[in-house]
Amino acid sequence: MLLQKERKCKTCRKMISFVIQSVIMESKNYHEDLTHIRSMMERSSRFISLSGISGVFAGLVAILGAVYIYFVLRREGIDYFAGNSNVFSKDLVCEMLVIGGVILVLALLSGYIFTAKRSREKNLKIWDQTTKRLLFNFAVPLVTGGLFCLGLLYHGMFVFIAPATLIFYGLALVNASKYTFNDIQNLGYCQIVLGLVSFFFLGWGLVFWTLGFGVLHIVYGLVMHRKYK
Image (cartoon, rainbow, N blue to C red; front, top):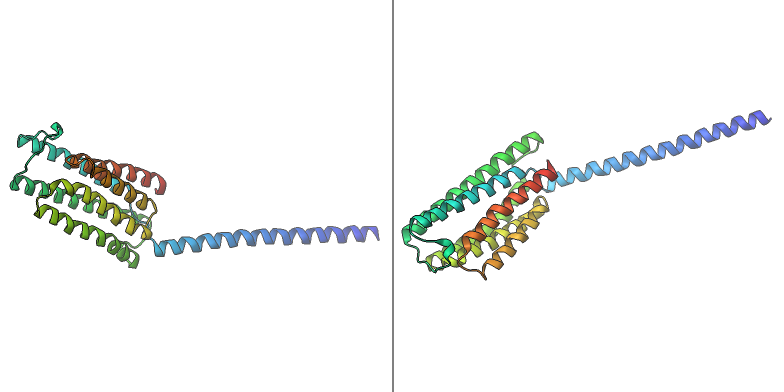
């Protein structure tokens, strides 16, 4: 009788152990399933192919462009860091606009190349509904800011262009951040703050441009690359 009871107890313990292990395994599988579902939902609702390297490259291009503009000003006999009020000729303004356009094209091109490469590596689509929503939300403040800056340019208010571009660019990043990494939002806030600060230091737009489009992009790119590589 005692042997039978011991056998029954052992059998019960084994059954209980088996049930507990099964519950634990099911719990682990359930957790893994939830994680997988969350990952799929994030992929479908957020553009996660942005490359940090593209931010670094865009920042370097912006800094090189700022340095080039500085030497263009020196060529025209303008010492930018002297703190004097300068009147720019129409040809000089047009030349700086062309330089700015080239910098923008190079930054966008590098962004596309590195993002497309990252998408292929992760086997993700680069063009879908999320991408369209991202670009639309990014473009609305950016285009608005571009038209606003053209108005400033038309009226000869050159000193306000740098602060305005930083602020509207920051707003564009914040507006688009809900469709991609949250880090984009932080970068946008930094650009907005930098633009607001530059309003109190009119005439130093090239410095703030370099900090915003150059240094901040490089820092953001390095953080993104390290965080999401």
